[in-house]
Length: 187
Image (cartoon, rainbow, N blue to C red; front, side):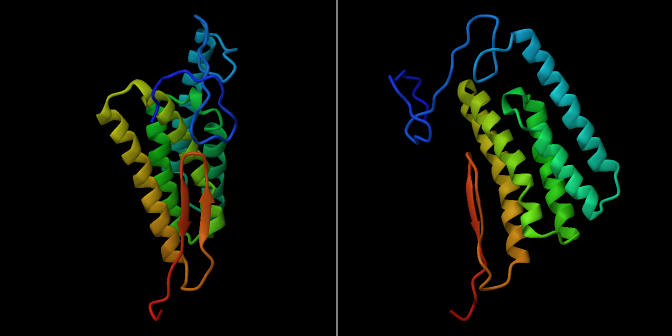
């Protein structure tokens, strides 16, 4: 839990702290505080338009294996800078992730191909964590539920594709870790 208390050091990879920057007035959003507020706002708006355009494509394009792989690649590219994601675009990322997972399951895409959508979910969740620091408990709960809904769909889809005894499908990201396996009923 973020106590907001400043500490003297926080090392990379530490689970007991998280380094954050406090930008000077007129700068915001990036890890180095090198982007002006107005440039950051423009980038956020452009990123939101890009994500909305990808969503339009997902909604109108005929779902083939190639199309779904393209959707996942486009979504991954569009979410690479999570601080530039608006709350609206984060919601769109979660909605698209659900649609992509459902479509990939119908097309019987491999579990390794399907896992590509998780990077976008991770980055969107990271932005929710970043933006939720000052939000109410209800907003934080809604953020957690959005992530959990996508991850539950992903894990059930993967579990349905596995056979008993097959190696677990494991995914490790900054915001979550998953291990999905199917156990034999005769053990």
